[in-house]
Image 1 (cartoon, rainbow, N blue to C red):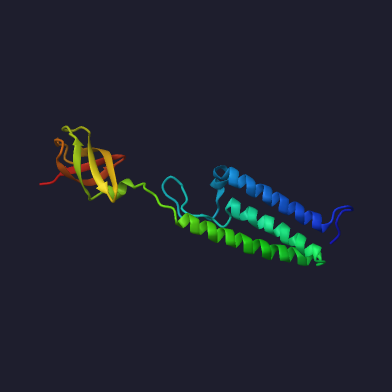
Image 2 (cartoon, helix red, strand yellow):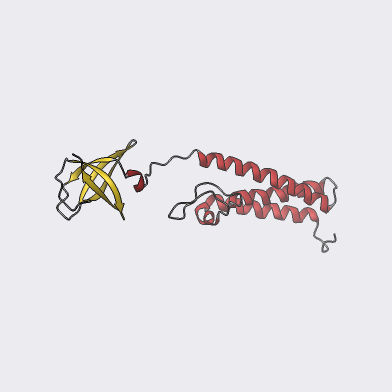
Amino acid sequence: MSLPDGISAFSIFLAIAAVGFLFLILSFMFGEIFGHGDVGAHGGDVHGDTHGIGFFNTRVVSVFITAFGGFGAIGVHLGYSTEIATLIGLVGGAVFGAIIYLFASFLFSQQASSGTLVGDLVGLTAEVSVAIPKGGLGQVRCSLGENVIEKLARTADGEGIPANTTVKIESIAGETLLVRRIG
């Protein structure tokens, strides 16, 4: 493989490593901007938020590019041909990219969320904290795990319910709970 005069394979591999490293630094500084194109991330909710890290995450790709350039430059420096140095770079990039992917996946799996889904409330009992007038809206309070949740509520049958009454959450209409008095 012939290169233009004055440009060596070593300098090309170093340039690739430098571009990958620069992109890695930018992805750490502005990760939220670059992270929205995370191809291959696991799952997703109704808001389109992904739950996990994709193999083509910007940080994983930038580590791959940096390692590819670095290992390719090492291969050229050791006297291997450009083709062999490219293979060395690919293997080094794949190994380091996989390490970052596995480490990031581990870190992501350790995250906890205190958020609750409104659908988790169906079937639970709650207490009316603000009286629900006939045909109107009130408010109920219930516990879900260690969280106390207060939501707007109306009765499923349209009747009023005074404050401090125990109710059962039957369903959800938008962000409003439909409840029925117990007993």
